[in-house]
Amino acid sequence: MSNTFGEIKIGKTRKAHKCIICNRQIPKGKLAIRYNGIFEGDWQNWRVCKSCEYILNNISEDYIGDEDFIVWLENTDRMKCSAGCRTGNYGSLLSWEFVGDTKETIKYTCNKCGKIWEEEYKF
Picture 1 (cartoon, helix red, strand yellow):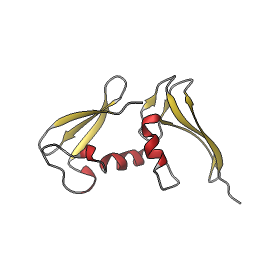
Picture 2 (cartoon, rainbow, N blue to C red; picture 1 turned 45 degrees about the horizontal axis):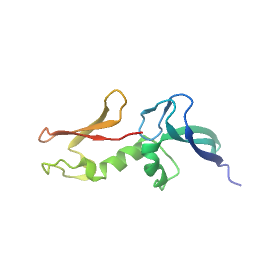
Picture 3 (cartoon, helix red, strand yellow; picture 1 turned 90 degrees about the vertical axis):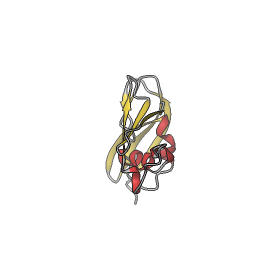
């Protein structure tokens, strides 16, 4: 007998929540994916912002967390320095952070050449 059950719904938030994948705060009134239920015997209640829906739908494992966002981000062309500095796995020469009041922009920095660029990642 499985001890995993629950439901996933999409709707506007009634208060601010934290996205379990990108760790940003989902503002009140924004669309989010909500899960409530039991997973492996433990109660789960989490939210995922609409920007991370693609990651949620393409995770092949049972656990969901911020590591999924980091792996997705580092395995995309987003992590390539336009000067061609990317080498090794997972964009190890780059650092990134969410910036701005609403945290809807990712700021990348190439640790080799110092180039800085930004990309929108909206809710």
